[in-house]
Length: 326
Image (cartoon, rainbow, N blue to C red; front, side, top):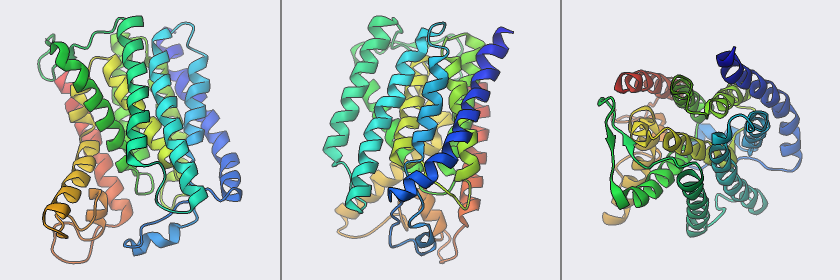
């Protein structure tokens, strides 16, 4: 009964809340003209222009409402929910500015960084000083081994959290891609949380439920996008959950798609500046590279649904590797 209460019910409750909210939110977002802006280089994406964005609000509300029901008995979910809400609010502000200005710009990069730094600092303090969760890291494929990096663990935490959050954000670019990939990652951490009795299982399960409901409307052709509101919130969830479980190193395995996405952007921008206009990829993040022909040397790329399917299957396999690494 305990497993049923802390596992099945949060999934179901969150799923129902999100499934009810999304159809309500879509016409409101459309009326407020909070719509998506597509990059001009992506001709096949131009038909998506005007699709409501900021649907991540439904995900966030569903997870928060579900988590509130469990906070009394599971106080350790508080910092995870805080990270989701904190980064979700940063994303909401970014989405709002984009919608008002009708451009691809929102918050400036340095503004985002400062706000993300503040949220991460509050999370780190609460996790280590209030809940006494150590910053030692469980090492993949070495059961029982924990890595103590001393003072280096603190700057590493900021690097890992901000890298993960922005990696998840960059993964949001195709219908259902970020939703599908993060369902796999959330399920992985949810299973680990349940069997280790970590105390955060309700929130991990709530995220799985909310994402499954959101995918019904976000799968190709998407009726709504999560926007930065959703992608940054999910990034905060992944990073916070990994640290609460002392498993940030496992993000390199189960969240490899996030890592590849953010690295593709860093490499593309860096190479472009160094060579004064040359590119490594046809377009970054890398999911667009495959859409435009990938490494094949000709213009016929993968369909959007194929990219999503491949990235999702790869993540599912990586999650199985993650279980082996335990």
